Length: 306
Image 1: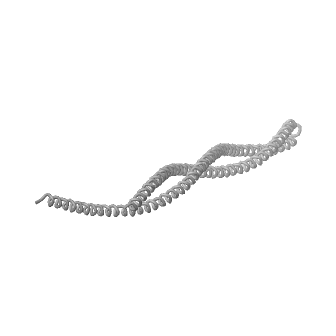
Image 2: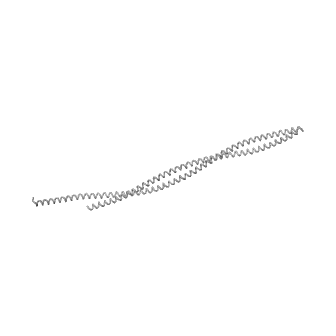
């Protein structure tokens, strides 16, 4: 082959190769451009969906933060109410303790009154017993006085008979008559003394009877007052027991409220942590939203270039 033929052959081959290369480049460029376009479109679509999701998450986070704030406010109010209830329960327990002390003092006073009335009842019973013995002794004195009166009457009759016999005896019985007269005087005096003693005994017996009646009434009164005091003591005991139960219940209520207040504080701390987490989540979503927006803008610019 001549040099000219070889030249044109090589030139033609070069042209063909150049065309093929250009064609291949065009084909490759077209494929890459199409792939980039599809990827950019997919990125744009995905970033839009991500942005919508982020906006939804932002709304949810905002609602969650509002709910947390509202719950925190409610828990703060509950905590304040719990603290107030604790103070009231403590005050009620203290007041009940004071009432319990007063009740104990009243019960102690009633017990002392009962002891005093028991002593009084014993003394009244002793007085009644002594009065009865005195009445018996007075009756014995009255009986003795009656015997003396009877003896005086008999002595008087004997002296009278002796005086009559002395008169009959005449001059010889005159001395005996004087003795009989003196005996009659002594008998009359003994009778008068016995009658006075009998009168005194009667007066004493009447006074003793009155004393016995008064003592009986006093015994009945003391017994009645003792029954009242015993019922009062029982009432004080019942009141003391009830107040003691109130004290125990108030202490339990105070303990429960303190535990509730502690639980409220723990919930408040948890809500504060949740609120802080929600704020951090909102901040992260905002940053993600900015990044997604930048990615979306870059994909749009890429599509515009292609």
